[in-house]
Image (cartoon, rainbow, N blue to C red; front, side, top):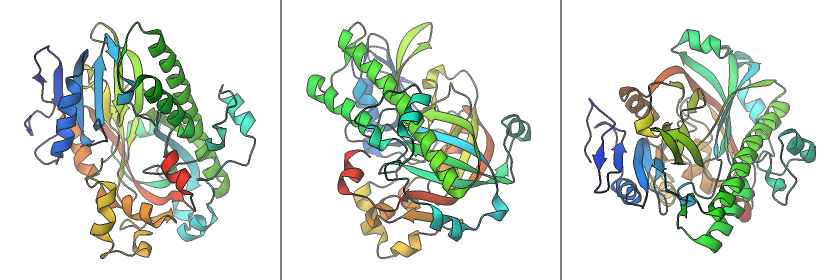
Length: 394
């Protein structure tokens, strides 16, 4: 597969006719292993379209930053264990100029720990049933999950910005989390009973999985909403939802004249309004409007910057240059709340690709229009953690 600045969505075919596309440019770097995983996954039976986005990077078995379309079969493994993981974006009524960063950062705590409020009421309000996994509702989780207070850096589309009810003078909030232990349990049961194999479209067991999957997607959305509510309550400001976008899922959608299975792993859907595409805790985030027909990119977009370095590579590369204290403040003036020192390094901005280039590639492919750009003020990851919390349900 090649790259080009003129046409960034590049079609290829395999013998049975499935399309293979890589949305990128010669200014972006895509790791060879990630491309190989994309090409290999495209060879699965019944896959008709495989798309890699500028944030494409290797996963354990399948690429992250990709979407796949099939009809006669679907593959739960392509969505992975954190079913329903996504980004929710919120407008606050807090004037950015009045925020005292260090003071507010000192107030925030417990977003990585179980919710102590009326959990049952929250579940009921979101049409969810009580379960053994509800200890995780309202918690961020490990890995690259976070809750972030942001402020407007630049507005590109004043009309759309106003139409969304956004206020450039006030802070916003971005929450990244998923279905926690619930999604992990669904995944564990899937591997135990079915392995990595796909399901035929007519398979009853497959539709049972999709029912559990859809419940986990709803649970994940409710989880993000509670994280945002907890953050807002501690900071003493009000919030209003702007968008909520899932990027790990298998859904049935209309595609090229009929029902199809759209698998997304680290790919945001472009069918639910505006999309927030974050960088890292030390870079900008972009609120964008999907444009164009997008059937040749599986109605999907990049979900973030994408990893440049694997987790185990980061600390050896950075620890001799930066102390943990150095990493608790960003070059944009933001504060980072993360008392897990390994995670502090693993999620350093240097470990991620250039989000500006990712967005530029999407613009060049005529997939998005930038509405506004935001910069981080406070990024919350964890106050404390247990190894089970970090590795069991991240």
